[in-house]
Image (cartoon, rainbow, N blue to C red; front, side):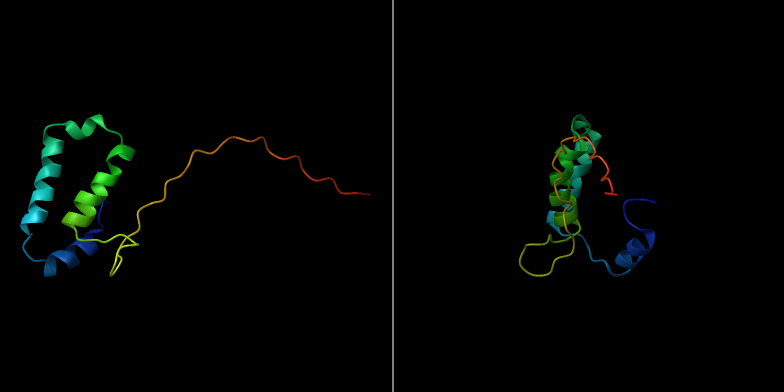
Length: 95
């Protein structure tokens, strides 16, 4: 399965309007970063924020939770690295 469920994509395309100049520019810039390979020198974590801003918000029109108005997606929370701790010993039953 791709990034977007085909059923959802088909529904959206049935009622979609022409892309605005801002949406076309966001798509052009993202495509250019793929064509010139500049995107490949970064990790997924490094480009995640840019992807959310450029593609999810600017191009697709989603708004993140916490912004005024309707919210349509929630960015994933940052997971701080966990410190390894040894397991606790089992509790002994008193006899």
